[in-house]
Image 1 (spheres, rainbow, N blue to C red):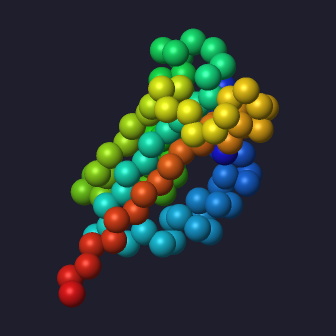
Image 2: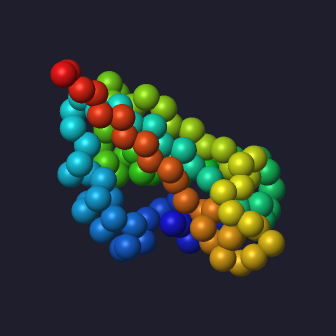
Length: 105
Protein backbone atom coordinates (compact mmCIF):
# COMPACT_ATOMS: atom_id res chain seq x y z
CA UNK A 1 0.00 0.00 0.00
CA UNK A 2 1.15 3.50 -0.74
CA UNK A 3 0.34 6.76 0.97
CA UNK A 4 -2.02 9.14 -0.81
CA UNK A 5 -0.46 10.55 -4.00
CA UNK A 6 2.89 8.88 -3.28
CA UNK A 7 5.04 6.34 -5.10
CA UNK A 8 7.69 6.12 -2.40
CA UNK A 9 7.91 3.41 0.23
CA UNK A 10 7.22 3.68 3.90
CA UNK A 11 8.94 1.39 6.41
CA UNK A 12 6.20 -1.27 6.23
CA UNK A 13 6.50 -1.44 2.43
CA UNK A 14 10.25 -1.98 2.75
CA UNK A 15 9.75 -4.82 5.24
CA UNK A 16 7.20 -6.53 3.00
CA UNK A 17 9.49 -6.33 -0.02
CA UNK A 18 12.53 -7.54 1.93
CA UNK A 19 10.71 -10.37 3.70
CA UNK A 20 8.15 -11.62 1.21
CA UNK A 21 9.27 -10.60 -2.22
CA UNK A 22 12.96 -9.93 -2.76
CA UNK A 23 14.26 -13.17 -1.24
CA UNK A 24 11.73 -15.35 -3.05
CA UNK A 25 12.37 -14.32 -6.64
CA UNK A 26 14.77 -16.66 -8.43
CA UNK A 27 16.89 -15.56 -11.39
CA UNK A 28 14.78 -17.66 -13.78
CA UNK A 29 11.45 -16.26 -12.57
CA UNK A 30 9.43 -13.79 -14.64
CA UNK A 31 7.82 -10.91 -12.78
CA UNK A 32 4.88 -8.73 -13.77
CA UNK A 33 4.17 -5.65 -11.67
CA UNK A 34 1.01 -3.60 -12.10
CA UNK A 35 0.35 -0.33 -10.27
CA UNK A 36 -3.04 1.08 -9.30
CA UNK A 37 -4.55 4.21 -7.77
CA UNK A 38 -7.89 5.23 -6.37
CA UNK A 39 -10.27 7.37 -8.42
CA UNK A 40 -9.41 10.60 -6.60
CA UNK A 41 -7.84 13.23 -8.82
CA UNK A 42 -6.88 13.60 -12.45
CA UNK A 43 -6.84 10.47 -14.64
CA UNK A 44 -3.54 11.36 -16.38
CA UNK A 45 -1.83 12.06 -13.05
CA UNK A 46 -3.13 8.80 -11.58
CA UNK A 47 -1.90 6.83 -14.59
CA UNK A 48 1.61 8.24 -14.17
CA UNK A 49 1.45 7.70 -10.39
CA UNK A 50 0.49 4.04 -10.86
CA UNK A 51 3.39 3.57 -13.30
CA UNK A 52 5.78 5.15 -10.81
CA UNK A 53 4.54 2.80 -8.09
CA UNK A 54 5.15 -0.22 -10.30
CA UNK A 55 8.64 1.06 -11.22
CA UNK A 56 9.47 1.70 -7.56
CA UNK A 57 8.66 -1.90 -6.67
CA UNK A 58 10.63 -3.24 -9.63
CA UNK A 59 13.63 -1.15 -8.63
CA UNK A 60 13.32 -2.22 -4.99
CA UNK A 61 13.48 -5.92 -5.81
CA UNK A 62 16.41 -5.28 -8.17
CA UNK A 63 14.99 -7.16 -11.11
CA UNK A 64 17.27 -7.84 -14.03
CA UNK A 65 15.91 -6.96 -17.45
CA UNK A 66 15.48 -10.64 -18.29
CA UNK A 67 13.15 -11.07 -15.29
CA UNK A 68 10.87 -8.17 -16.14
CA UNK A 69 8.03 -9.53 -18.16
CA UNK A 70 5.93 -6.46 -17.55
CA UNK A 71 5.74 -3.25 -15.58
CA UNK A 72 2.57 -1.27 -16.06
CA UNK A 73 0.33 1.28 -14.44
CA UNK A 74 -3.42 1.18 -14.81
CA UNK A 75 -4.21 4.29 -12.80
CA UNK A 76 -7.86 4.45 -11.95
CA UNK A 77 -9.03 2.57 -15.06
CA UNK A 78 -9.32 -0.59 -12.93
CA UNK A 79 -10.59 -0.05 -9.39
CA UNK A 80 -9.78 -3.02 -7.20
CA UNK A 81 -12.09 -1.96 -4.38
CA UNK A 82 -15.18 0.17 -3.80
CA UNK A 83 -14.02 3.79 -4.04
CA UNK A 84 -17.15 5.09 -2.36
CA UNK A 85 -15.54 4.05 0.92
CA UNK A 86 -12.32 5.49 2.39
CA UNK A 87 -11.08 1.95 2.97
CA UNK A 88 -11.66 1.04 -0.66
CA UNK A 89 -9.68 4.04 -1.84
CA UNK A 90 -6.87 3.15 0.57
CA UNK A 91 -6.64 -0.44 -0.68
CA UNK A 92 -6.58 0.73 -4.32
CA UNK A 93 -3.26 2.51 -3.73
CA UNK A 94 -1.25 -0.62 -4.36
CA UNK A 95 0.68 -2.75 -6.79
CA UNK A 96 0.05 -6.32 -7.83
CA UNK A 97 3.15 -8.50 -8.21
CA UNK A 98 2.87 -11.78 -10.12
CA UNK A 99 5.88 -14.07 -10.03
CA UNK A 100 5.89 -16.85 -12.60
CA UNK A 101 8.31 -19.54 -11.59
CA UNK A 102 9.70 -21.41 -14.54
CA UNK A 103 9.83 -25.13 -14.01
CA UNK A 104 12.21 -27.45 -15.80
CA UNK A 105 10.47 -30.69 -14.85
